[in-house]
Amino acid sequence: MELVIKVENLHRKFGSFTALRDVNFNVYRGEIFGLLGPNGAGKTTTIKVLLGLLSPTSGIINVLGYNPINDEFAFRKRIAALLENPGIYEDLSVYDNLNLYAKIYRIEDSIKRIPKILDFVGLLQRMHEISGRLSLGMKKKLAIGRLLLHDPELLFLDEPTSGLDPIFQKEIRELIQNLARDGKTIFLNSHNLYEVQQICTRVAFIKDGNFIGENTLEYFYSKLDNLKREVVFKTLGDMEKANSCLINLGQATQYPYACKIELLLTDPMSNSELCSLMAEQGIFVKIINNGVLTLEDVFFKLMKV
Image (cartoon, rainbow, N blue to C red; front, side, top):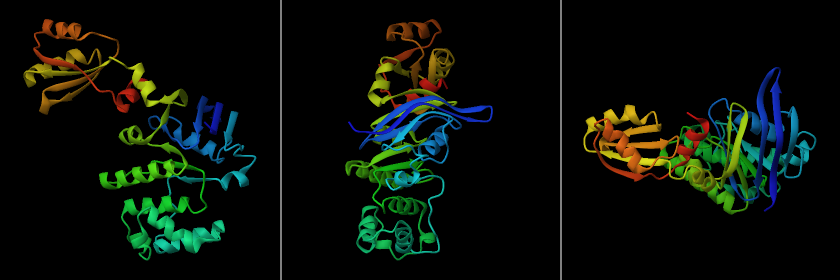
C-alpha cells in the first residue's frame, strides 16, 4: 500500500499548553481514514498541522511526500480541505461559484469540467440557481464540488455532514465513498460515529492531545470481544432495579420499550455469572444475549466515558 500521510512523534504546544503529545499514524492511498475523539481532543489541531496551517513543535510530518510547511506551494496543488467555512459565495449562482474558483486555480478546461463536477455532486440541474437559496445539504455538496476542481489526490473533510438531515447525510456519505472508489484518499474528522462506522476503512483515536491507537474497526472490535451483552427482563420494574446493579459493571444503556439493557462490561463475565448476580438482588432475567459491537462501544471504552 502506498503511504499518503505519515505522522511520527508529533507534538504541538501553545505556550505551556500541550495540545498534541506523541501522535503517530499512517494513511494509505484510496482509503477513508477517520480521526476520532471528543471535543478538545486535538483533532482540529492535527488537521491544521497536516495542512501546513500550524507548524509542529516537534515530530515528523509527511503528506504526499512533502513537508507541509517547507513545500507549501507544490503540496497545496495536490490536496483540498473542507473545514468550518464551506467557502461559498451566496450571491453567486452554483455555476458561477465553481467558475470563480476555477479562475483562481487556473483550470484550463473549466467549461467541460464544471458540468461534470456538478453532475457528480448532484447539482447539475441547479447550476443556475443562486447559491444562497440552496438548502444546507446542497451547499455542502457544492462545497465538495469546489474541492474537486483541481482534481486533488487527498481531501480533508471536517464534519462534512454536520447539521444535515438523514437524507443528505446519506447522500454525502455516498459522495465520499464514490471519491474513494475513484482513487481519492479521504481524511475524515467526524463526531458522527455511525457515519464513520459505515464508510471508514481505518480509524485513529485521540483524547486530551494523547494518541490512543490506530487500526481497522475489526481490530478494535476484537479487543472488546465477549464484553457486550443484551439483557432482557420480564418487567420494567426488574429492568429499573437492574440498572443500579449493572452500572457498576460497565457502560449500561436502557431501552424501556423493549425491557432491555445493553451492557458493555468493564471486565469479562459469563452470562451465568451475570444472571446469578441479578438473581441475588431479586431481579428476574428473561434472556441474556451476546450483543453486537458498534463503534460507539469502542469510543466509550477507549475514552473511558
